Image (cartoon, rainbow, N blue to C red; front, side, top):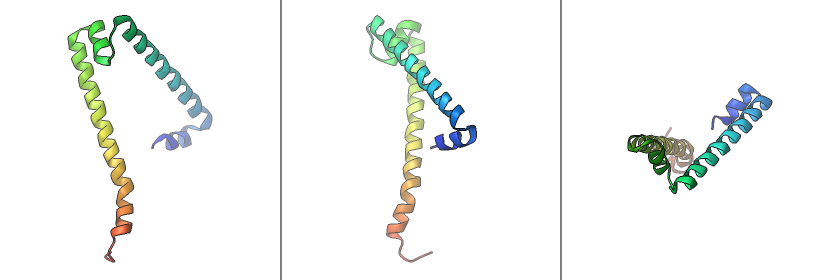
Length: 97
């Protein structure tokens, strides 16, 4: 939801260029991850990390993924609350102010 604000503050051209650069970097990182998974015969972030860096790094990646997904869930719940609160107030408002 902050993307329109970023475009407004940075300008349309710089923001578009940065979005393209980030998309290319994301694509390249996914290519590297898939290539590593194919070459090691694994099929998850944790497995690739374990083969490349050991079991301690695998645990670290697992914790980081858990924290990332926890933040995503919290952000989703906040977004749902912000969207649905005015709607529910509109429908269930019984004349009190």
